[in-house]
Length: 302
Image (tube, helix red, strand yellow):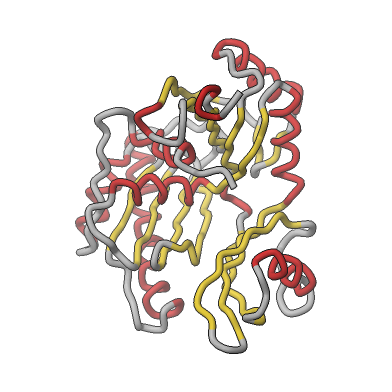
């Protein structure tokens, strides 16, 4: 059965929730269903499944209720362990050769904070001798554990992605004009992920845990968190301008997304402290918290 007939399931996993959608094809308008499941406390900790049987039962229930058995799956893993590096490689290498070459350099010319990474690369500019590439690395064992759980319950994983890339993909589809330097502020219930995009490529990311995963947020606590981490956002904006681009570029657009229940207050605080415009996402069809899974649905299969 072809993809256009069977459709595809898309799942985003955080340390707190599992968000999902099912589409007939890779277009937003083809969405058949969407929703989320709040996960039991501690089930996902730092991006790791702590109780595989419980996680598989949650997946099994979704597969059974939505008749997803045998469907293809695209999923995003928690962004807490991703590493983005810009590297130089010989310009004569193909993409396949480049992946092999970079793997031989891990632990020699550069280091990663984990062993046995799953990697993806993005080619940038090149001269006669060298090519700049972006390396995206993630612990392979974390991805494999999710793949195994999904396969065990009847889904067919075909693509793994990062949440930040999914949200940016959703923005890119509806953007009004090109901006070369964009900062994604993806603010979830328990964490803030800041990802800088230069010419539509993610070149820097920072993950910050803001509160306990299952903690109830009062308005007073939320305001304190917003004030504290708004300072961090401004620091990253300055870091991008003066350290990453050496003063040549500055952030010219902000994207704000996530499931933090006080996003409107976040936006208000940012606008009070910065002159950088914030892209206005349309929430006509779904809430802003689903933009990650909608962007995931747009991802093409390789």
